[in-house]
Image (cartoon, rainbow, N blue to C red; front, side):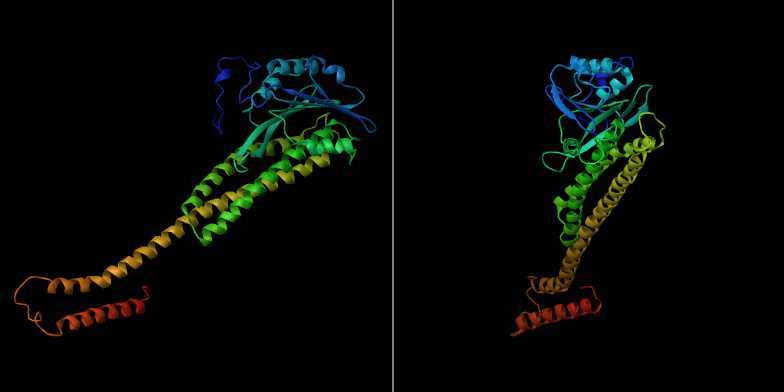
Length: 354
């Protein structure tokens, strides 16, 4: 499947708001986890039957509903009916190739963005979609498959650390966004370390396999940039938006996300330039090495041209060659050849050609 542009043949001819999953199914059955909490109490459980979601919510507590697996259209539709969600928002949740965006509806705030991770080989980057629906007293998150991206937040909830248990769902929304952006930095740092190692290797001893790695990481950096650049629009819009679902006390925390995202984008630009320079450095090093080889071969051939000329003359099969029967002719010719080679070497050295 294309990484930079996803094919949406499944939705061809369908009207807007049609619930059709586009993408790769990454989990057999959707997993639903609901967490309700306030300053003094927390309840966390997995739900098997999604028809009973609303019976687990509470009007006087914060409800965090997390769904891992968005391929089940009937599940998405039921959640939409329980929370009175727009079909357009539900469609975007199931469209895993959706460009990251944020939109304010009458009863909630909807946002979708990309989470990036390295694959099992710790090199290939994979992007997965995560969607947020922020309501008056609830937050719903949709992920393509189970992951540990939000686990630090859960630990803080259970240990009652920080302000998270004292704040509303808007602060929970902020902490989850913070996890996503921190993960950007971790992935970029991991790739950046390898890029810096390649830089040292190319300078020390350029090899063909290094060129393959340079091209590989150029593609990965481009893929990461495509996945996270739109997140800037989301963070900026969250800071500008005047929504009843984001409390004034949470606004300063959201502004801190801007600098974190800018740091990620700056790092990407730096590594993009480094890779471009590495590509040029590699070609220059290979070109220099080739020039040195050609220089040596040229000098070697130039020295042997007059020697070959003399050997060719005395190798001719004419009967009457004046020096042919000279007693010391062989040694004289060898000495002359050696002298010619020595003079040429001294001349090349004086001209700094070698």
